[in-house]
Image (cartoon, rainbow, N blue to C red; front, side, top):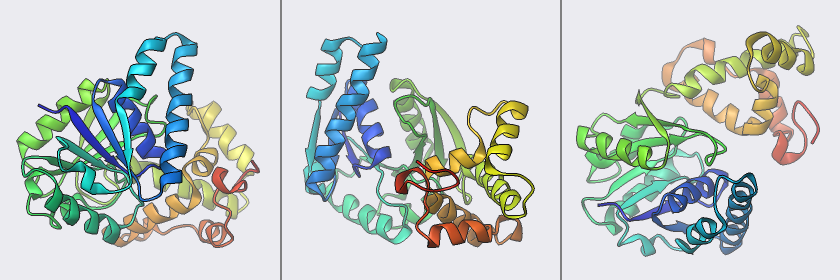
Amino acid sequence: MIKTVGVIGAGTMGNGIAQVFAQSGFTVTLVDVAQPMLDRARVTIEKSLGKFVEKGTLTASDRDASLGRLQTATSIDQLSDADYVVEAIVENAETKRGLFTSLDAITKPEVILASNTSSISITLLGAATKRPDKVLGMHFMNPVPLMTLVEMIRGQATSDATMRMASELCTALGKTPVEAADYPGFIANRILMPMINEAIFAVMEGVGTPEAIDAVMKLGMNHPMGPLTLADFIGLDVCLAILNVLHDGIGDPKYRPCPLLRRMVAAGHLGRKSGQGFYTY
């Protein structure tokens, strides 16, 4: 029976994941090395829940109860009694592997360890533990409280029981689980990133301005947001990292990151978070 959930990483994704678990009645411990990040996370979650109250989709007492179920900690040692753990730290394979090895030592042997990675191999992360059958990917979409999809990634050793349990958990969160195999980029980014990359090539080659390209995809293909606006929202550094994973992992030149994308990241023009990307914020 899953009652207590650990979420590691108090960034945008970790906050959102902690929020949906707390909203769905689970006791949540959100862990991050930096206390200021945890303080900021709580404020962000309070604001997000407040918006649901304003819209009338959440009562004020439910909001208060959700916040009451959320605690924070600066060490993963606090997760020794957790029933389920979701990792949402920086998108770096070695850092994640180190964390999974530590979690394997700290948590109860039956606990499932999930990663919110958007492109890193689940098999690789599972191999860093003594329980690869209990390791899977749960790739939530941003913003987590609003997006219903969770991409469920089955590693080479992930058991059917683990996939079933994690899928039931998704349903309990009001999310829709969709299974993907453990190949670079899974489903979402394998299809999305080449589109974003192609849009950047179109800018570089002068096929159209960012505004024109986004307008065509919004008005012609009915996308809610153009690919360049979306790239700015995701972070151009994140887009580049995922394209590198696709390119290195599959070895096909069609995944080669656009030189303009590399140049913008080198200049620190990362999109919305840095104030400048294809657009100015």
